[in-house]
Image (cartoon, one colour):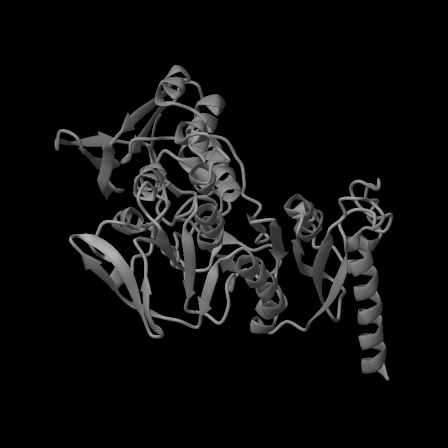
Length: 456
């Protein structure tokens, strides 16, 4: 059996490792168009900020290490075509320019996503960057040697993390966001405002409701960003307005693309084309709360999809359980996390949802390092089923509490299940009644009151 994998980062290398473990006799080869495999792209802002020493520290496995496991790895080899019926791919060596046709019995498309570049960002001006891979990070590091004023376009995960990084590097920083506030796709409005306040208290100039029209430049280098609200001067521009799944090869293979814009697969990561699989950021999944298809490109999801695909391509039987939309990030001291649905998302889906907000401390209130923590807990009114939670805390590690709710969402748990959960307690970690338990108790009473009102 010959298994060909296109893409050598999270999903691709997880699939390769699982395939050779499940079937050591399989011939597994990975084609990676770039110069690196198996690295943690989520760590890129932290290398630039100095929390991680070097880009090399992000590399989990080298090509030689993977070859020692029996996996063929070909760097700077780009798959440009797929003949699914003939069981072949066309591969171009990006160094020599030579192309070859490679056979496969099973094919995995782990082609990831590309950073969205609006028309105004398609430029040869120096100092204009996206941040998706190690070469992007290295290019930004080079620009940082002379940059003084940075403009970040986009207030999502990358934009918010990079704001802290660039402030710590001594730059003045402006965030330009077209939406009414930052973190718009992650949080409800009240919690977006908490994130914005943290940014502004640390010297970030946040300009929301502002649209970028063009870039300005001089002598081949960017000098500013022209917006609907005027010109913002800057000699470093980070474009972080979103990502788009790379589906070109899937389309070439005849695979179905879902309504999300990502590759449609079943629970075994199989596409609509026999023998062709898809996994990772280019692939959609099922949301366990809504039962709808979603495209949520995150690291754990990509790795897990890859493992499932690897087992199945090698002759095993495994299924992907779906996602609940868990996300977490920090910006300066603030930790932010969410899982499941926000109230805004639940409303958009037509669900009869109710939320409560609780403010407490992440440790026992009398403990010296206790910090304020804010929690929004959301549930379905008629059933008491948990729908999601959002957490914000000045001690960024404390928002990992989100995982408690994520686990319950996987089992379609109710608010009462959360309240009855035996959470650990010691003063350096929480109050005796953890903020999640307080929120569950309050939401249970709110649901009871609403139901009584409806019955009355």
